Length: 229
Image (cartoon, rainbow, N blue to C red; front, side):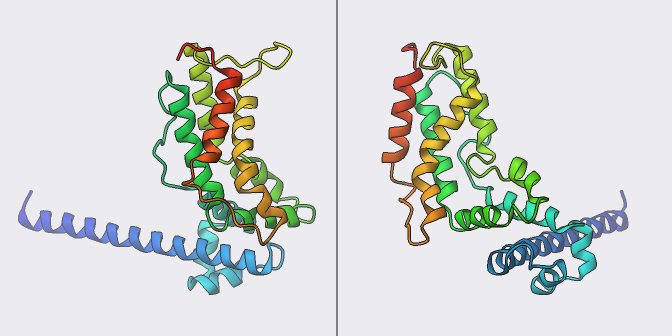
């Protein structure tokens, strides 16, 4: 390739990178403005035009990315569930204490982070009047599980297949890993998130405090471990 061609290619690359940066910055401002306005005014009383003004973008830019308020709200809630975690995929099976401990700590950090409880309260308050939020609650923002649920369920399935865990109910009937996943996340959520929904003065425990997750892991192992790990 000629020098002129390389220069032209480099210029195109720089221009593409610049446009990508602008898009990312616009998206970040839109999500931040939408979250702040939803929490301050409520879902019903917030318009896309207000969000565009607060985010300092045109309404055309906002509508191109988020064609409806429900789509934007779904993006806001999805963003709230994003967290840097040690495992993007489930831990390898073979050591349930290790795997449950790491997934549990990730989840504790998520549900204790600022804004999670406020968004949950908003959904609970406005859902009866805003039925379009039902799909968001059921998929993108399951209050008691979030995206950790699939990861945990798949991990529990792998441990069961490895023979380290056996999921049976009190009467000896097999339980699906999805039910056991809900039990585990519920033990953590009940300590970090649910009290915040009914008590505005509640200060959640520090998610780096190992006691709550350790107890949840111990209960899971005492209930379901086969003793082969």
